[in-house]
Amino acid sequence: MNDLELYNNGVPQNGLSTSSILANAFLSIDGTKVLNMYDKYSAIPFNGVIIPILPSFYMVDDIIYFNNPDKFGGGYIQRSVDFNTVSPKIFGCVCDGVTPDHINFQIAVNTCAEMGYKLDITGLKIKLNETILFNSNLLLSGNVRSTVLDFSSITSGKDYLLISDGANVNGFVFDGARIIGNLSSGSALRLNKQGVIDLAVTDCSFKNLRIESSGIGLKGAYSQCNIFENIRFQGCTKPFELGPQFNNTEFIRCSFVSHSATNTMTNCEGINFTSCNHANCTATSHINSFQSYFSLINYYAEKISNNFITVGSSNQVNESSCTLIGGKSTDSLLKIQLAGDRCPILIKNPSPNSRVIVYDGIANLSPSKYTTRLEVDSSLVKSDNFLIKWDAMADLNMNPAFGGGLNVRTINSISTSIVKNNTDTFNGILLSNSLVVGNPYVIVYSMRKTLSNNTISLRHGTISSQVFKINEPDEEFETRYLPFIAKDVNMAIIWAGRESIEFNFIGITKNEFPSDITKSSVMKSNTFPSIGSYSKGDTIVQSSPSGGVYSGWQCAASGSPGIWRPTGQIGEISGTTAARPSVSIIGYYFFDITINKPIWWNGTVWKDGSGITV
Image (cartoon, rainbow, N blue to C red; front, side, top):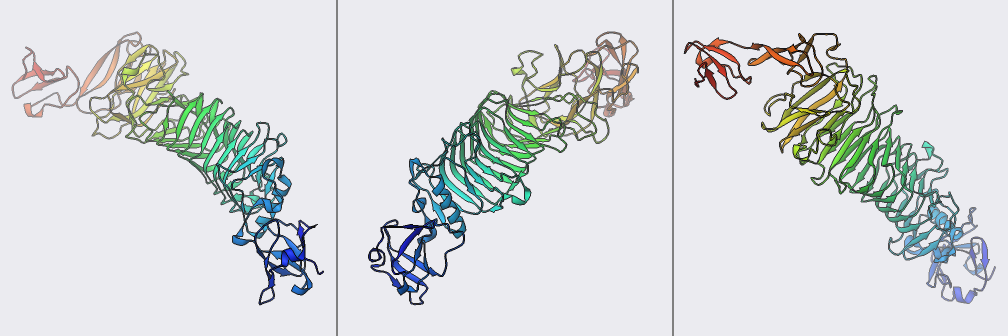
């Protein structure tokens, strides 16, 4: 073989003369390379390595094989690629945005992955009518402003870029491109199509992408430790569908906007959305999670028509959890629904301009499982911003390890100034909206003020009354019980004061304590009831006995709630002036032996029988 002949994917290329290619070529000193060759495809000098036979896969991506002339030792020449970076044009891609390039582009991908070269698509417009498969590591580099991968003509239901179909992919990098599709297609990015754990996609990076008008923006299963950064999912029917086991994944500065189907996570663990934009969602829920753990950190939400997040489901076996840290919503209400009975929620430091509502749509949480619990830890939640609609109306077991209700570590006040009417369940905390009128219930709570002038009230239908006794700022949390007979389906609490009320927990249960209010004439509480129907002779025993309080109350006249009178005082009833008790009950009696006269507490000072301050 005396003539140098160019091969492209095993096909000889004509029109090249020995003189044009070898005009300045020479053999390396060690006899292993041919240096300073030239061809019309690269238009620049190149070198080649002498090899005895062609590779078995015979793919010619960034590599071009030549017949080696006898004067250079015979065999073949394998072209060397300068700087390990090649363009898909070297494999025959036209890159005009019109001519279909999927066949040659797949060749470029396969060869670059095999040889460890970076495939540079910067400034190219590549028309792709078939799925492109990445079954091994590759660095695919472009620019989101100048690179276009056009899948608008791909067959309905097909994926665009498929990472792993029968192979383990580790370390794939895709940086910079605009990906255009059509809404009848499959997924723009698909990870681990076979959904097999042994073929996981791991430690991959996807950055600086704009994905437009695809059926699903991102779909993946059994993929771990991947990063998606600065990606905009625009106008996709569904931006993402993750799981099972799409784990330990970061979404950083991503936008999920203008979609009509709900994003889903199924059996995913450790998904973090950091500084992401969520906007223009018309689906029933922006995100649904099933047995998944995820967090949204410093999020931005805008124009979410229905639920922002739905956490868990009624048929889940394992827990679902959601953490919101920081973040802002421009909507009047940002709604989070707890749809399962094992859905811990943690909300920390939301923006003072956001209004968040958390509500529970489950009427009967199973006592055999962990019950839903909401935790809020924030000193930055400003008034009027954080709302909770809570229906923990379940047959919860009342035991020392109280298993249900609301566990809150500081919610700032929902001021009475925003209460439009007494039946407005979107102001304050809705404990339940499914009470059965006439049935007995107990509110169990433990909370304290952060300022002594805060007040808290109970709202039950059209009845609003201040019946809660809560601890002062310097006091420890104390569990209290408030029994009542339901007069309305709704039960809510509201509080006034511009600072926060600290909740250790609050919940509502039925027929747990006392065991049967309707038949028993003795109940336990720290105050007399303001709602419900009671009979003359019914008795309430003080649940928080201490000096200076009443020992209990007794119903003196039947009614709703009837007329109640205190049954006695707890504490000393006589002593010296110095030994006068510290009391909170107006009318508390004490006989002062120093001045030898009976006196009564009027709420501010002690008075004798003549009304004189003593």
